Image 1 (tube, rainbow, N blue to C red):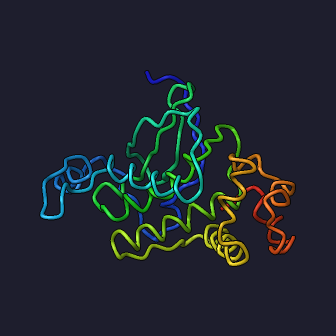
Image 2: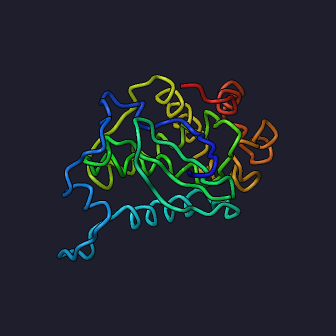
Length: 217
């Protein structure tokens, strides 16, 4: 039996008006493409591993280094709600994608991009803030659009509102996320003082307060 685990973070698939698969069957060709790479005229084809590498590289370049106290151990698929989780409660963190993504590669990488944002500062028992979930939503939308020219958008208002708040913040301070994380790398530890120390004074107080509240979908 697997050691006790703690499930945290909310799901990307909950945003979408698509019912997840509930059985374990899937087209082999699609699932293989997530795991088996092939040589193409443009180089090796993308897999979960290489997409993770690409996404994490982009995240760290733009928003600062992730918390390396946690070891990222991989990706699996189950159920309807993507999330990160902590196998064995031993500073390991994994990403779980929905079964609906197993036969939908763009959706898989869209969900992956969202969950990779949570790898920047895994929080275990702490809930994500509006800032963190809004950033994850916005980053995933942008990544899927650039990588596959497909537009995914939240169907649940909480994610849409959170992304809108982050867009508003970035309108005042385009480098807001990296500035905040230079002061406090963990999203769940940020407070009003973090915004002040980061110099994000042009953003309205009401917006800053919303971004720091606990995310509820």
